Picture 1 (cartoon, one colour):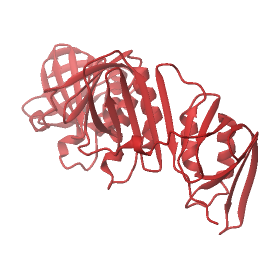
Picture 2: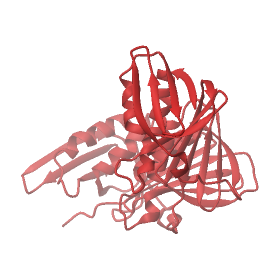
Picture 3: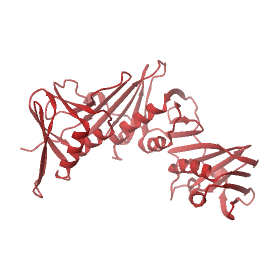
Picture 4: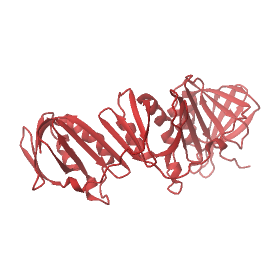
Length: 371
């Protein structure tokens, strides 16, 4: 196997795939990239068995073949080289790799490509086309709300619900919940599945300016085709909680605020909150919002006042400041609306304006206030 390639172009592709390469893996071969050369087309595969990234680029090929190369030493070598052509020459019998640059030669041991695990196939897969912007938006709005609790496996991913003319992304950790819906062209595929957060973070990093992404899925895996790169993520085999049951729809009280002012105020007030609850208290009356926090253990307290629009009964309600800050941080509108029913029921946070083809609902559970 022999080919020449731009060092920076190859480094770019290896960095993209490197997110799934793990050290101290169960299978040592998973610390490698799998190189496959056919003609002038080099395919690079990396996998941790949960997520697989396959990407390709054009090279000057001289001799077809396959080799597995230790990821770290190869990527470190390319990072240390300025942009220039490099030549890879592989001795198939000895599995020895020689890299030649303008500065000299670098030799490293390769591994047998036969040891690399078989890749998931798209058997019985269904497909839908989605814009890269929509997927990026959906992941930005939902990933932060997933759970890190290993006992709640279903909540460690994003729940995807494909309906006749829309796709719904849902994430929750039982304290906060995000539901992001966008309209699509009508299709006959109806399905639901849970994609793990770790794989989706890698997918988000791989997203580029591709306008359309082909999303295919079967009962075991989800396949995302992004131009010359494919991201394959093993689905979570678990039952997702009935998220609709926790969303309150009878919210008579409506608070409208400037998003950035509210966000900055929360960041300041949260410094003085109890570190275990992060509780801030919103005291809401007509035209005025008082935000306060106290940490009795250290005699710390803070209070700020914001102007607002409020329709409803005066209310005192406590929230975890960290959750509110996360939610406000992924929104982009100038104003936000918080819909409330009572101090012991979840608050609903929504952008003040939403595109006709999208709907975003964020739910945050209250922190119960002591007497």
